[in-house]
Length: 124
Image (cartoon, rainbow, N blue to C red; front, side, top):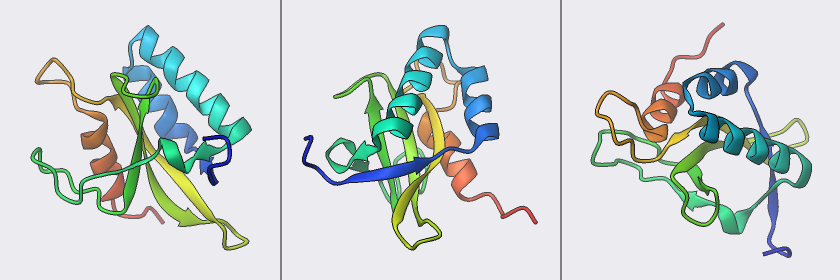
């Protein structure tokens, strides 16, 4: 996987802090370590999976990608939307971190959080 193309990841400080505030201690450690790794090494395309355009839970994340943490199939995930940087190169924009499939019905999944942020009207 070392020869795999890699993408830069851009993190929204407010969204990341919100996700850490809702994470368990173990989850927060995973998220911080993953962010540091991605900012240092960029994310290999081989670690990315396409999100469902329309999932059973009602989320719509067509065009977004996800990664499981820890690799290869951990309990947590990060979701990113594709974009371009100022030079026109593809980048991944952080949408959410969280539990992929929560055990509690009141706890939103990473996909539900990502859906809310992805479909949120732009702030001006």
